[in-house]
Structures are given as C-alpha cells and as structure tokens.
Length: 292
Image (cartoon, rainbow, N blue to C red; front, top):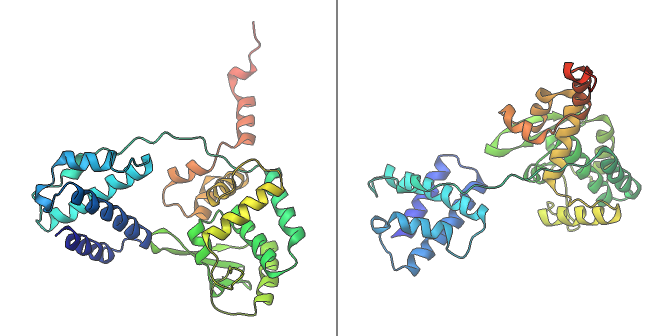
C-alpha cells in the first residue's frame, strides 16, 4: 500500500517541478520509512501514529543530525501530499521539529593559499587534464560555482568571443556570468586540445563527464602537495570567491555572482571584510579616546 503512495508522490513531485536531487533524496528517505514500517508490521498509512514518526526520525538506524533533518522534511512533504489527496485526515508530520544543527565557523582560503594553488596547477598545465584542473580551480575560486553546476557545464555553454559562460543552478535556473580574460585564454587552449564543439566541458581520463569523485581526488592531491591544512572542497572555494570578491566589489555584486536571490544567503558566504572593518574602527569616535 505505502509503495503505491510513494510512487504517486514521486510523480506529484515531478509535476510540481522539484529538482532531480530533491526527488532522489525524498525517494531514499521514503524507502527507509517503508522499511521501518514493515519492521513494525504497519501496513496502512492511517494506522501510523505520531510517535512512530518520532521514532523513525530520531532512532531508526542511529541517523546523523543531517539525516534526521532530511527525514523531517521528507515526512512533512509526504504527509502534505497524503492530506491533499485525502488519504489521511491531517498532516501529523507538521508537529515534527527540525533538529538544531550547531553552526560552525566556515573557512575560506587566504589569497596566499589560493595563489599557491593557481601556481601549482599553472606549472603543470601542459596537457589536457592538467589544463582541466587549472580551469576547475579558477572557476571555483573566482566565480564560486557549485559542484553540480561545474560538472553540468557543456562546451556550447561557453562563448569565448563575448567572454560569457551559461550555467545551470538550483531550481533548474539558467544564467550567464562574465569570464575573466585570463581564464578565457586557458579555456581556449583547452578547447583546442579537445577538438569538440559540443558535449561535456570538463572530462575524465575516459573522456566522460567529470565526476565528484574525480574532483575530490584533485583537491586532496593539491592540498597535500601545497601544504594546505584545510580540506579542499567546492564549498570552501565558494566561500573563498565570495569573501575576496566582497572585499573589492561589495555584497550586491557578490550576490549576483553567487546567484543568490536573497542577500542574507550571500552574507553567509561573504565573510567580514577586514579592510573595511579596520577603517571603521579607526573612525569610531570611541577609538579616539585616550585611556585614563
């Protein structure tokens, strides 16, 4: 019975234009939920009590806090669908609280660390794969692209004559960004070696679209060889791009480059501008007072 509801719910999400990743996450969590209900010998959605939902979210297979958050979101969406189609009288999942995730202080690469990476990849950029690696580091560190966005780029999305790149983002949005001239020259050299006008832009050794695993290997090797003690990943580069861009261009330009619809989201990435902060502290009236 539940399996049929799950299939109908997935079809509903597709019609509602949920992203592919969201549908994948919802399906995975609901399959877990179905397995849990079978272990409890519950066959009807009308017989699922609120405490069963609490038990599944918090205790089933000892989930991490991020899995628990995902389960709450999934159940709220699923029960909304069930209520909408009158399979259950009310959305009891709305009572489920989201677990509180402690905020950590995000990191970013300093200018010296990022320049070390650029020099490292520039020295090795003699063949097509090393050129690819240099382009990856520059796209991530200058434009702050997400991993999924980076991987999805096709050759036909790049216009070197105008210096533009079209990217795909969350919610199936598409927009363009300006490419720095230095990056255009490197991409031009890379595409000359590729000798292709269509297809995946960043490829693996097997000439297939690059994977997240390949990106992780590139980052890990680069960090080890350059003495960078931070774990390199796409989000770290996104924080790096936002922080350094914010220093010279301000929040509005940074918001546009990152593609955020809300200014508050950009501020999570654009860390405190130390240059402006120092100027402010010098001008603050109380900073002019001499100590007694």
